[in-house]
Image (cartoon, rainbow, N blue to C red; front, side, top):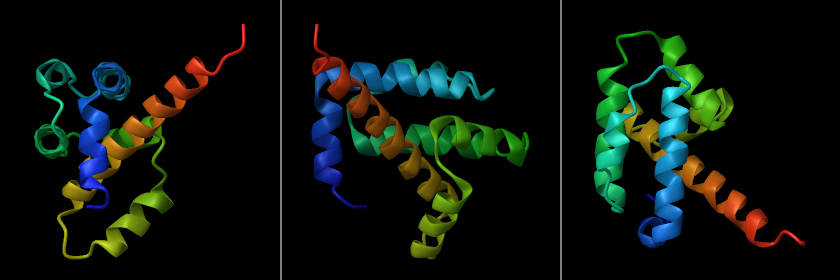
Amino acid sequence: MENLSNLNNQLTSKDLFGAFKIQLAKDFEQSNFPSSFVEELEPNYDRIHEKILFEVQRNKTKTDSNLMRLLNRIDISEAQLNRYLNESKNENRYNVIAELIIKRVLQKVVIKQHYKNNETP
């Protein structure tokens, strides 16, 4: 996992973590995935990864289209997913998906906050 300490640092930022949780819940809800777990999240990458992994695996029986809807909602393309899966052949598919979800949601939050902070009045 690349830049795990950097991810942990970003997640421990109170402003970023709050925005991360809001965005994650919104993405899960709008993809017909349960989002109640988000409220209980702590700013710790490993714990967040565990919870997302659990939810994705628990709901894998619904349909693959729900998972693809979630990934599309979060803005993870099928090509990107396949590239990461090929790079991580020894890794569980759902571990890779959970990592991608965390990274992309955090990236979206950072970009939004950057533009929000740099708006000119």
